[in-house]
Length: 116
Image 1 (cartoon, rainbow, N blue to C red):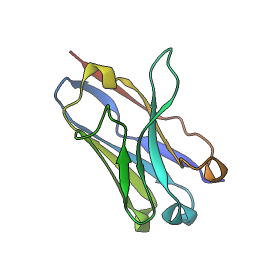
Image 2: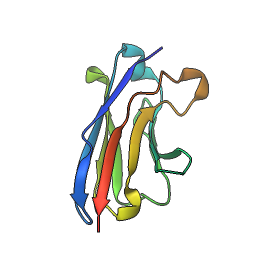
Image 3: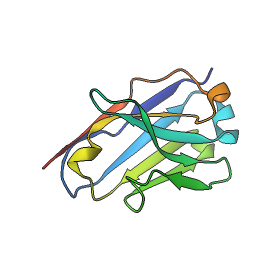
């Protein structure tokens, strides 16, 4: 299974920006769709952005126009640029494939905290 390591989270004021990174352990990453998920305390994990191997993106309505997912297949890395952050974006962010049969082990995630 693909091992995933997320980084780039932190504490930011509302309206600020962060860029998350997700490094995958295997090159298979470059040929599968990937996504960013988030989970806030007491809530279910939700999928916020996806990107296909060819670069087609899709976003949850809650982040559309503010977040941008991208990937560098040569580096086995996927990114999430988060702009105009809101307190409701506060959550632990994870990356993984949105295709259940292709998912790797869930990483530790990276915490994003947005203060008002």
